[in-house]
Image (cartoon, rainbow, N blue to C red; front, side, top):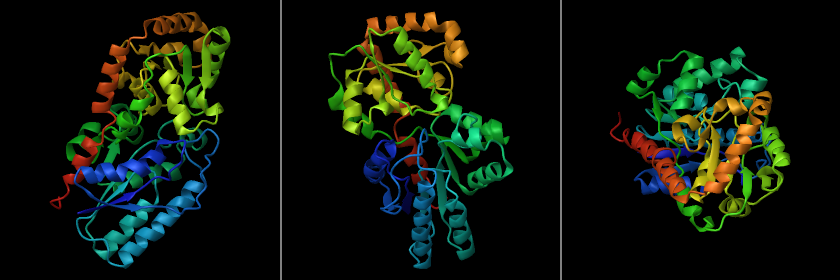
Amino acid sequence: MKVFLVELEPVETRYTAQWKKYLPEQMQFAGLEVEVIEGPSDAPTDTTPGAFLNFSGTNYWKSEQLKTISKLFADGKVSDGDYFLYTDAWNPTVIQLKYMAELLGVNIKVGGMWHAGSYDPADFLGRLIGDAPWVRHAERSMFEVFDDNFFATDFHLDMFCREFGYEKFELLNTGKAHIVGWPMEYLQHELKEYDMPAKEDIILFPHRIAPEKQVDIFKDLAETMPEYEWIVCQEQTLTKDEYHSLLGRAKIVFSANTQETLGISCYEGALVGASPMVPDRLSYSEMYGDSFLYPSEWTEDFESYKLNKDLIVAHIRKVLGENDFTRIDLLSANLTQNFFSGKALYEVIRGHEDGS
């Protein structure tokens, strides 16, 4: 069985650049034969403001991938039992892949990793397009094409099932859906050198500047507590190395997000000894213990924040005073094992090696 890895475009400021470097190696180490399906070298690398990718550039990238996949079929290089893994399930070319495979009689399996979509009201698609029939039918069609639909967290699959009317137990029981975490085992090794024992009074906002991330709450706290250094990372034009160095010096990574289906930056912070401060909602609730969660109502929106501001300020002072590295190390070990490892993902793919 060969695994064709249909990769996301590698944006340097996103984890997609790291996936391009590490994911094929990790899959090969897990015993999988991998061939990467890349996009064009001249695809736009800048992101649409506030978004994860470039809204036009991502389609330019995917279109080139479709050309490559089509030629593989035309040249007879796709065989029965081969597997296509889409690292972003929201990729309409999977429908064209299915078209070719079925009409040409090639018995392949297909997996897709779901990150977000219109079914999430806080996502760009959810905010700008909502439940328009074309997008909902497109997402359902892509879901049905995938033999394996991968979700990083239970929260994300719950939301998907709720919006589309699927029964979660049935999807999990039949193997149509899998909760696997994301394949980021490389992070614990890549960030090890940035763990600085002497932390500074730095509080980081490591998220995209987008409405669902509520940067206005962070900036208001910065004005209220000027004795600490508050940094919005995306306003600094940082390289990956500079960003990781900043994480290693910080005491807190702060979130007031209203959208999160995993939350990579808070995990990165924990790996280098910065304490995540996250609301008790979204994927955070299943990933973080009570000592890292604060009540959701404190930051549900800016009005809720103003009502609870004194409580948040007091909580931040408490966290800054504790600096409990043992507790943070235990958290990062749990997150690594259960949410930031590709082990479960690779096992699902390997399970198709006998043609099932």
